[in-house]
Length: 179
Image 1: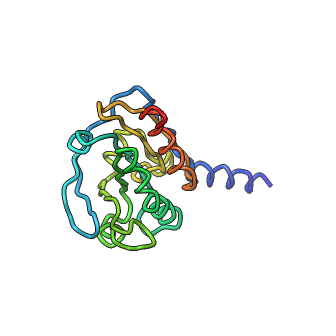
Image 2 (image 1 turned 120 degrees about the vertical axis):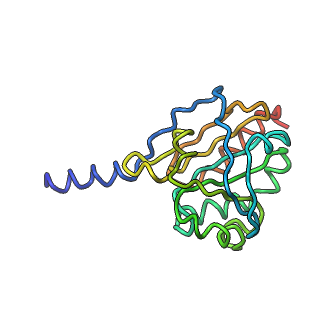
């Protein structure tokens, strides 16, 4: 029984996010990263994206994994709602970065509706305090809503992919005065 308890604790620790230390009101770290939109490579720069409006930066552990596939699909379905809030979305991952071009095009994932960026060695995720506690070279599942002025207005840190879209859209609606 003791071994089962220890094993359960270890499994939970590996799957547990580090819990983002960046809080609403903090300045979002600027970053530049290689990215793909509909299979086409480009360089994403957060500062440039913020000039156009708020940005949702969501970190995910790895392309082509069950939870990440679902989360990307949910974000792709909601892109019209994000656009209505004058916001853009970018996914960032350190996992399976060699698969991001395909991941960005596939209908069951991003469907070419928003970009995904490669984060080799989880450098960007570390700047955002969004790594998995027992696997710090992987990003946690953490979503940030960043206002045009570069301030974080919402942080949602949960390995379950189901509520990230709803939480970030609600924060954008509040940011935009509930319109």
